[in-house]
Length: 112
Image (cartoon, rainbow, N blue to C red; front, side, top):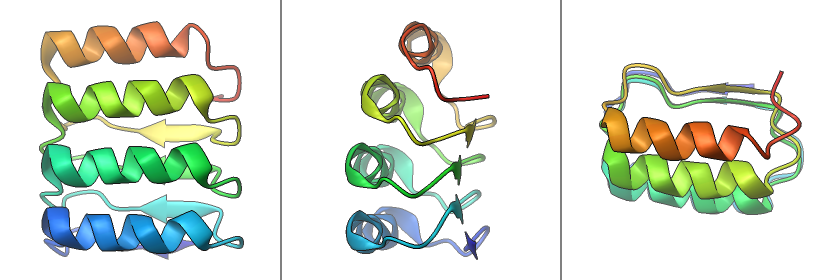
């Protein structure tokens, strides 16, 4: 478990963490809530979650994900087959972001 909640890592820090998590093979839970990662950091996290095969829990709550970040996460949810829990509430995804995430959940079969 790696919990870096509420540390203001921003998009640059989120991108660096995503690069590390692409090659990490042991972590199962990652929490990056309340860090102002924005759409750029969110997109980096989504790309990482397309590759990482060990994370089962991912929380990006309370970040300014926005519709752009939500779209990146939705694309990841269509591909990722290891996540079991995914938290995004309070991330300002808006109606458009909500729609793409809901559409992705139609094909995701691992979230519980």
